[in-house]
Amino acid sequence: MPAPSYVQLGAEEVARRAAAAREKLRACNLCPHRCGVNRLAGEKGKCRAGAEALVASYGPHFGEEAVLVGRYGSGTIFFAYCNLRCVFCQNCELSWGGEGYPVDADELARIMLALQQKRCHNVNLVTPTHFVPQILAALARAIPQGLSLPLVYNCGGYEALETLALLERIVDIYMPDFKYTAAEPARRYSGAPGYPEHVKAALKEMHRQVGDLVIDAEGLAVRGLLVRHLVLPANLAGTREAMEFIARELSPDTFVNLMAQYFPAHEAWRHPPLDRRLTAQEYAEALAAARAAGLKRAGRW
Image (cartoon, rainbow, N blue to C red; front, side):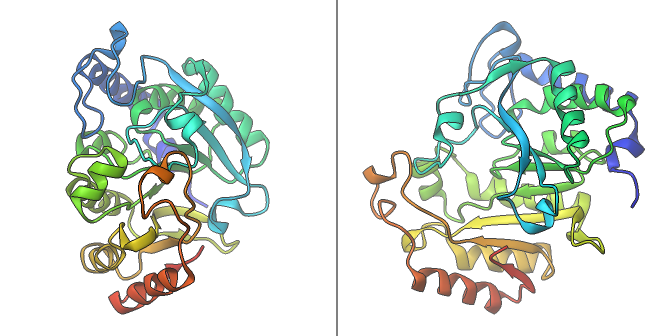
């Protein structure tokens, strides 16, 4: 198996990108909110994150897609806070409440290396967007110490192209959500103005960088794009349009996890029809939409 992209790029270049990303915190524009706050001076924007990364938990995770989990688990690092405000968030204690503890670059590097020592198959960065500078700084420290696992960028899809540019040849596996194809549900239920245009641009850039998902002889993902789409009640996610966009603008071979596990978490009970579970018929229609769009690798993974 070839070395991960960031190893080939080298610690010096990763450190340079970390410094460039850190400068963005002076008037934060890491994501499409472009809050403009000085996080290095303690100011907080939409995501409420500051200058230090906050980690809620880390360890082998066996609830991710099989191509990430393998035998020893996906090495997940759950970060606190989020640049989205989903009313149905299943990790609301982290994303809304900021549950976690501060880590510096050395500690975050140690966590990455600890996951490798546990024989995890990848380092899975969960909700990383608002902590890209801190992640890159840690990665630059971990490379000389022998980190060699594929890096998974597990995000909500609300990404800025300038930030993704800093991640080229660093991230091996992009795993974004494709939450909505219509602007109003995105604004109302996730506090994400312009989400459809931003996620579509981000998906194109991610696919340009890493291509379709490559799976090795052991059934493990080593590089490429894996798109998650959570099917919502009453088609609030715009599933048919999402599948058609992926097949047409990315590739019919895009690996798509059509997720059926929606349930009314957090404040969803206040927002009908999000106050109920998905029906079997609604999920069957989502699968049919993926097939009709011509997607060859879409299903429940």
